[in-house]
Image (cartoon, rainbow, N blue to C red):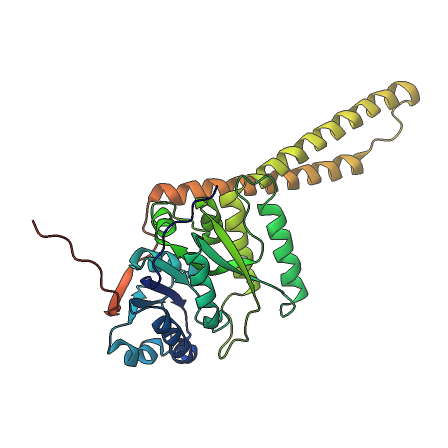
Length: 327
């Protein structure tokens, strides 16, 4: 029998919004988001994490910082979305923490349904894309291959098409904050901490202004980080390739011996020899490169540099935290 935890009807909500050059989108986003949060609870805050924007993001946020509700954290430089999400999670004070993008593709109208799922007992409510018809065929194929690879023999599978748009209970947030790794792949970390997860399908809206900063190159880099952070499949794959090549080499060597004794050695075979050497050299360099990626991850973790640095802060939330009892 599953025990449903007792949940507040109007919880304190923190909404984390990472932003990079999203000045044109922040006004419409905050207008709709603050209205939704205000209808759900009197205790709420929106944390806009400026990941080193070069546009007018500070000016666009200035009017929203004049009254409680919106907090502005500007990172000292561009650390990337994973670091910005980590910064927001570290500074969020609510009973539940909502993560969403600043480009208006994550509909604020879905927030009440996510909060209701949390009230019903879910520890994490993530929104998964119902369709990828709006994406290019190359991105759709790449995404499918990524999920197949990262979830192959994975101890904790990552939900397909579930991104950063999600709501988390404080227990989940505290678990994420306890993870010390520097190379952060948030989609994998959400799955790794576990807890009761509910998936809600949604259709992303069109971006209101600007263009995405996630090029295919950056997406490929993020995908490779996810693969190397959460699975040893590449190492196992090349171990299997090595075994197959070794068996083929043994079989070919046996054939050479038989050919020499039966037919004589009339053909020198220099072309075969050179081609084989070049092929095996390429395989060795590729396998060393994959191994080097894992070693590089170890090197980054050993340095223990912070995931992000805060350059400046402004504004305050509308969450009234309970005061500590006086001695």
